[in-house]
Image (cartoon, rainbow over all chains, first blue to last red):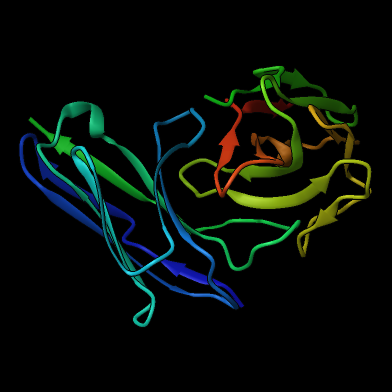
Amino acid sequence: GQNIDQPTEMTATEGAIVQINCTYQTSGFNGLFWYQQHAGEAPTFLSYNVLDGLEEKGRFSSFLSRSKGYSYLLLKELQMKDSASYLCAVRPRLGLDDKIIFGKGTRLHILP
Amino acid sequence: GAVVSQHPSWVICKSGTSVKIECRSLDFQATTMFWYRQFPKQSLMLMATSNEGSKATYEQGVEKDKFLINHASLTLSTLTVTSAHPEDSSFYICSAKSASGLYEQYFGPGTRLTVT
């Protein structure tokens, strides 16, 4: 089966740093995605990791350890607009059936 | 960047009727489109994968006769919810994968379905 775990909710303060963890057990692995989703809107792509290590993109960074089945999304210099759900998703395999399995998402609340 | 549209953005229908939702890739050809359903405060649940010109592949527990998917062209996929019931009320989101794309799926803005 496929299992992706991440915390349900987190709270952080504006200007601070927050790390959202994700662990996965899937039948295969060909990449891990992080998406941001504001309430009532579709997800927007944040990052993609397929090799171990840290990928940095502005205020957001994503880390992957395939041997541990673990990833995290790091958000720096938090802004109020970062209040959203963050979805960890895994693609078990490449091919025509290139589906992505989503975790339940982490709702991040930013306090002023 | 790649743009995916959905129509309608929201729809209210009566129980027992059918509703069709369209998903279009506007500036690229999508060999594969995915349909998701999302209930309030929950994550996206993949319903089915559709490849142009072939039958959709449904996830376990999704009734293929209730959720009809057609992917007739490289830019259009449709999801028809047949004989809708209030429990089908949800946020339906499609995503599209480019034939030439590396890995990314592009999401549509979603369709809010309310069945009364």
